[in-house]
Amino acid sequence: MNPSFYWKENNALRLLVSRDLEEAGFVNGFSTRLGGVSQFPEGDLNLAGFGDDSEDNISENRRRFLEFFEGEFRISTAWQVHGNDLRIVRSIDEAGDSEQKADAVVSDIENLLAGVKTADCVPILIGDPETGAFAAVHAGWRGTLNRIAEKAIEAMEREYGSVRGDLIAAIGPAASGRCYEVGPEVVDAFDEEFSTSGKLFSATSGGHALVDLHLANKDQLLTAGLRESRITTAPYCTMERTDLFFSYRNEKKLLGKTGRLMSVIGRTL
Image 1 (cartoon, rainbow, N blue to C red):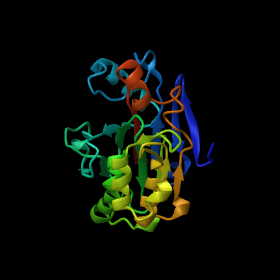
Image 2 (cartoon, rainbow, N blue to C red; image 1 turned 135 degrees about the vertical axis):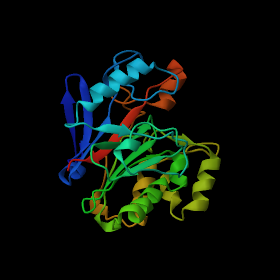
Image 3 (tube, rainbow, N blue to C red; image 1 turned 90 degrees about the horizontal axis):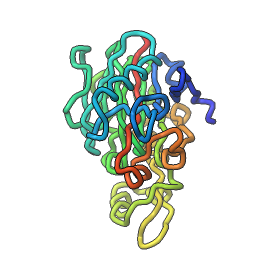
Image 4 (tube, one colour; image 1 turned 120 degrees about the vertical axis):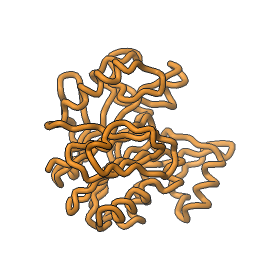
């Protein structure tokens, strides 16, 4: 495994942690499906709703998940819509789940975990060790096309005075370029938006192609001004490792439902 990540375990639960973010003063983690009470098919740690699970199950799963983090942290999320809008959380009173439509949560508040929910899309955690600002980003192909990671960085710069070269980013488990197939309309849209999009795709048939959203978002972070040495990518594909992670593309077809992972970041000081 990439040495910039390590596993943290708590009974049956496992959490993937970015060592670089942690050493810079940010609690963080990418959840797995292990150790919960949800029936996907059983014993799964589903951390969000979408009508496929009970509120009691989600509440208990989140309680267990929060045991990874010392202190009284509250999770703040948004209603994700595959766009490029942001939720800025400016006080602990604003913490919690929100119906605001956004695909990134940005803050600098202590005792708050900015969180995004995924099940094949790319989670990105960004921390600024100089100002204490941080962001959690949800980037599927639409969010990537809409430059959601870049929008989050712009918000950190605007709201908290972050300098782009100071930022640290960890890209979490997601559907990889070995598995994630898209149609010709997606290929065309990327070609129109990104001059170097050709390297992101491996053609399959009928104009379809496999797309590497891990690489697409790393490139976007580099274009936004982050240093390559401060960007790390977790070596896991959610579609290949359904023993560890939820995969919408695999499981929705088989089970008619799937759970959601959660990726979070917050300040320790």
